[in-house]
Length: 328
Ligand code: HSE
Image (cartoon, rainbow, N blue to C red; front, side, top):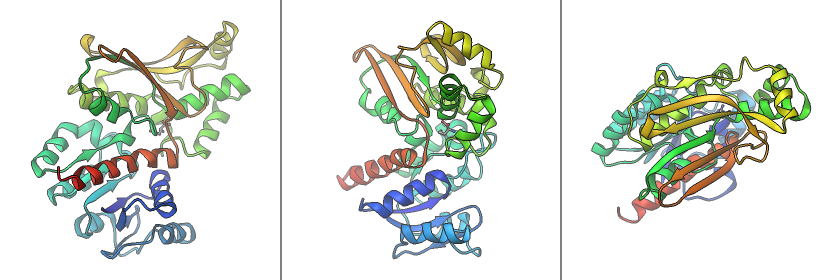
């Protein structure tokens, strides 16, 4: 499989590191960051891209940009992992449309295009007979979309409860366990690469709410937007509130809920007992699914991070590789 990679931030770097470290039968034929790009139909060395990026700050030549790569590189899958713009979904949505119109598959970790334009992009992909996959948009390394869309296809999923933002969970954990201030904990989460380029997306609950929109629209075939979600973030939570919860052997977690039958979509900080399965530590995410056939299912894993998110992207790429290799 030939891929073109758009974005060399935390997720892109993780993908390049994974490709440099193991042979997955994936050939990189184009790569771009926000200021440069490179195209080579014979293949580009992922380690060479990482070295160049580290030394010069650019992954390729300043005379080539992301649009050139999307339009001209020779690839089977466009891997779009540039930062999310939740307001417009651009420029990622345009790159994705271009790739689909060229008859190429698309794998993305970019929440903007999926939250804003899922139905339209899926329709374009179906029309072109290609895949549009976005596992990395929700819950990082946890394969929750694959589970919901494919593995649980025979179930009615009545409810989803989840810790869906690694940055907020990290902040809440560090404040409760180590007595850090909100600001110190946020600075650490940023330094560790968990936070969005604009971390207010995380702490105000926008990032987790976007993930609820993606889940509702892709799994339950809804057509909701951020406005349909009742959102409270952790930005106004006090250190005192966390201390009071601790005194009752409880703690605070930012919990997202979807109950499709009631059209309930909510994100809010909740006091929960420490032995509850949603009380996970650090940048972990956790999800509980309530289903008719499979019963209750619980998942936890790294919700953010470079290699962890790359894992989800690579899973989508290898899924497409294997599906189409099988003559489907
Ligand atoms: N900023 C996000 C988080 C990254 O902290 O969960 C993963 O979507």
